[in-house]
Image (tube, rainbow, N blue to C red; front, top):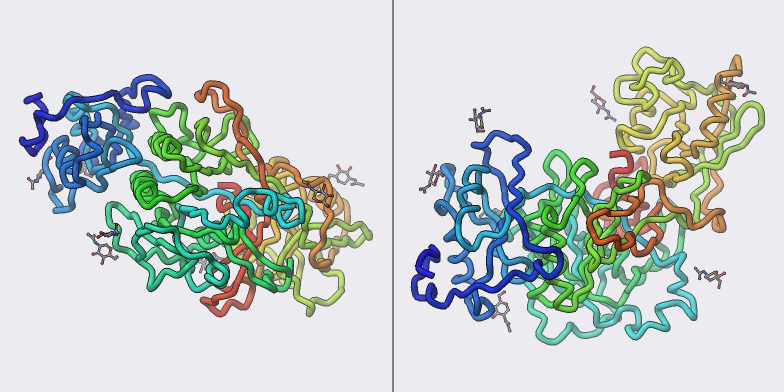
Amino acid sequence: MGEFKCGFTSFSVLLLFISFNLVLVHGQLLPIVNDYGENTSQIQIYIVHVLKPVGSNFLSAEDLENWHMSFLPNTTLDTGEPRLLYSYKEAISGFAARLTPTEVRAIENMDGFLGAEPSQRLELQTTYTHELLNLSTLFGAWSTSNSFYGEGIVIGVLDTGIHFPHPSFDDSGMPPRPSGWNASCYLPSCNGKVIGAQSFKYGNTTIPPTDIDQGHGTHVAGIAAGNFVDNAEVLGQALGRAAGMAPRAFISVYKVCWSEITIGCEKSGVIAAIDKAMQDGVHILQMSFGAPKKFLPTSFEEDSVAVATYSAMQKGIFPCTTAGNNGPDPRTLSHAAPWDMVVGATSTDRRIRATVTLGNGKQFHGETAYQPNTVTNKFLPLVFPGSNGQEDQQFCKNNSLNGINVRGKIVMCYIGNLKNIEKGDIVRNAGGAGMILMNFYIPGFTTSSDAHHLPVSHVSDKDAIEIKNYFANSSSPTAKITFGGTIFGARPAPALAYFSSRGPAGYNGNIVKPDVTAPGVNILSAWPVEVGPFPSGLKTKTFNFLSGTSMLG
Ligand SMILES: *[C@@H]1O[C@H](CO)[C@@H](O)[C@H](O)[C@H]1NC(C)=O
Ligand SMILES: *[C@@H]1O[C@H](CO)[C@@H](O)[C@H](O)[C@H]1NC(C)=O
Ligand SMILES: *[C@@H]1O[C@H](CO)[C@@H](O)[C@H](O)[C@H]1NC(C)=O
Ligand SMILES: *[C@@H]1O[C@H](CO)[C@@H](O)[C@H](O)[C@H]1NC(C)=O
Ligand SMILES: *[C@@H]1O[C@H](CO)[C@@H](O)[C@H](O)[C@H]1NC(C)=O
Ligand SMILES: *[C@@H]1O[C@H](CO)[C@@H](O)[C@H](O)[C@H]1NC(C)=O
Ligand SMILES: *[C@@H]1O[C@H](CO)[C@@H](O)[C@H](O)[C@H]1NC(C)=O
């Protein structure tokens, strides 16, 4: 035992080691230091799995931290930053630290080492709704499940934080907090609905977990457990009573996703949040993020988050994850652990209709949320900047419309490469009067009711082909966009969204995933800022449609 550099000698005699839980699932964790051939003097965050000392349940947090520190070369980097970011207590037996690949190789040779994984930035994904599931009808799950409206349940939402003042997070009608609940709250004040709010950013846990910049966490928390809000709408569309899946459930917020050039959820912080949520006593973990397409897990050794949710599952917590936005190809799942609920995304039967009428009289029903009633019912010239085959112009990328006369015209653009609303801004800034946003083969029939800033219709691939044929064969093509408001009963519905990741996983013992699908296209939920062409900044009662963040990556 003496050879273990434990840092606190009084304990070294007690340190008998037991085998790590994961062995039960998938054999021995292997050392998988994968530096992708990177500069070996490069410091990265690693998640390091180590053996658990016997009696570790009785160790103080400080003793456990000292045990983890004993694996590190020293306590700080040249820059003075601490090496140790997180010392995990429940989710995994291990820690997260700043190390170079060479330093990790040295740790591999130490007794007690099990495996190490470079931390990764995970992407935000999709969400789901109750509308099509009949939860709100008399015989739906709400009235038949034991837990009325999710009353008494605590949902831990790991995401971009929460826009606390939103009425979806009002505590009216909420039961008293669970007895013994003692999670921290780094918001101005928690209430009887949001009963915990914490942040995890590179080891820093003292940042308020607000969500004024991203909105995704607010949207997800609203879908999971938003309270009833009457007259919810997006620019007047989809008007109705908004509510989450479990409107009487509590929310405990864990902000793990941060904007740094792009938004991402750093894995060591995600595990720290799971670790804390387990100690806080949540019942459900809601995790709407996963590995990007290029770095999908191919084994559980590469997926420390799955190891953490395994521990959570053992404590009776229900881990809920998304299939991923990497479809429609097979083997594109971001999560595939047998113990995770993995959810794929479908459309609903609701459309926010924007109809394209061509000069030849043909009509095509697309979608948009911004439906101004000031638009003249007049045919306008139709222009397709990408008809020359230039990719930048097909996607209406910024500055690609220079030198093309789009003023006062309806502009045809393929979706992709940039966000739909930004594409509309480019058309608007170039003087375009409207945009037909066209799917191509892969996105197929999945359309978005985005809150655009000019008249738009997002049409299916099938309709786009006909519109292009008309454009190609007409000497003076014209079109108009008219608005049909909110339509229910669209068919076929539900239909699997093209972006929803498909199985199989190949590494999970042939267990079929995703487990279920749920509505994930154009879902209305809470949003921190006003949307549409005339935004006036932060508002408390706004909603937005979201279908996941990176539709075409
Ligand atoms: C490796 O990275 C360090 C620190 O970023 C840098 O100083 C060094 O020049 C790099 N070496 C190589 C071979 O790229
Ligand atoms: C810790 O070790 C690194 C090399 O691994 C060294 O550059 C740094 O100065 C050391 N820090 C302290 C405080 O000793
Ligand atoms: C939901 O309820 C409606 C009306 O009661 C019914 O037609 C529909 O089939 C139900 N949907 C599901 C998914 O059960
Ligand atoms: C609640 O948590 C704080 C630290 O976050 C701790 O100081 C306090 O003792 C805890 N109270 C109970 C009753 O567990
Ligand atoms: C953590 O973040 C807060 C807010 O950005 C900052 O004030 C504080 O200095 C940070 N703490 C550490 C240890 O970096
Ligand atoms: C397009 O690029 C210009 C600079 O060339 C920039 O000022 C403008 O904000 C960009 N527009 C959009 C919608 O990204
Ligand atoms: C129109 O043009 C397309 C492509 O240029 C062609 O395939 C099609 O047959 C033409 N005719 C009609 C009626 O669409």
